[in-house]
Structure formats: C-alpha cells, structure tokens
Length: 226
Image (cartoon, rainbow, N blue to C red):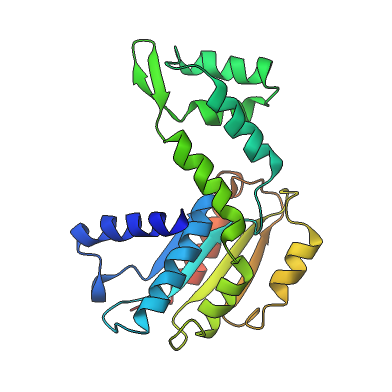
C-alpha cells in the first residue's frame, strides 16, 4: 500500500545520510508517484509532531496525479498484462500484442513494453504485478484533498512546514470540473497550496512540456532552503 511505499523511501534515504538536517528540502512525484509524495510528506509531518529531529520537505510537487479512483483504462492495462504468458520474447512482440489483441494505442503499448527486463528471448516485468494491483486498489483509500489541507495548514500535528505545488496536464481529460473545484475549495489554496496547468501537455508532463515544467519548478524551488 502507499504506506509501504513511504517506508521504501525512508529506507532509501537513510543509508545515503539524507535524514535529519540533511533531509531533502523537496519531494516530487508523477502520477502514482505524486500520490506517494503526498503520502510521504503527510506521514513525515505527523511524525514530526512527536520527533523534532524529523524534517518535513519544504515543498511537495505533485505532477498530474488526479484524486479519486483510477481511470478505468488503468484496470484495462493491468488486466491485459496479467493475462500475457511469461516469459515474453521481446519488447516489439509485446508492443504488437497489446496493440492488436488489446486495442491499445502505440504510445501506451511502447510504454508498457519499456517495463520489461531480461535477455535472449526471456523477458519478465520489472515490477510485481500483485503489488501493482494492490496499489491501484489503494487509490480510493487516500483522502487526497484532506491530506493537502492538513499538510499546508499544519493541522496534521505541527506548525506549517510544507507547501504543495500541484501541476495539471491540460490535455488530461481526467481533470473534471468537480475535481478541480474541490481542490480549489481547500482553504489554503492560493497560499501554501498552488495549482498550475500546463495547457499543451498530456499526462507525461515532463515530456510534453519539459521546458515549461522545468522553469516552473526552478522558480518554485529557488527560494527553498533548510
């Protein structure tokens, strides 16, 4: 679940010495990663209420992570890849299979194929399919709006420690008006919670609008210091 992912981040940072005063000043995640970044900051802020040696990120960047349950296409993808027999001969074979038998567009099929590992005609997934399915089921359990409010208002247990920057892809149709309105109704919107829209970007904002995203993050992070 998301809490396990947060634990993975802790265990990655600790041997690198990136804890305490050396903790990262910001965390950024895209899509599922954005939800994990949100969970990470919320968890740290809650723990920091009891242990002042814990440092909460000053900024949390969430890149095109839409609140709520995942789009039905996510379940379609997981069902498709779960039905493909292993080992898989090669990436090109997988791409063609996903396009012809599962009616996926080429971009999605190629992205899925990039998640293979192996050689000599024997490839497997780089991720655990069971865990992937469990994480998707965990989407509905995360109270996205409430967590943003608690982080940016300090109501999770400690004075204000972190601002949140939510970047939306203008061409991502999952950003329904009711979702956007709900986010804008969060009391800290426009203060410690900011929303940005990259009009010409699809879900892969870091590819479709790399220059605009980079400038946005440089401007936002330039004044962030411990």
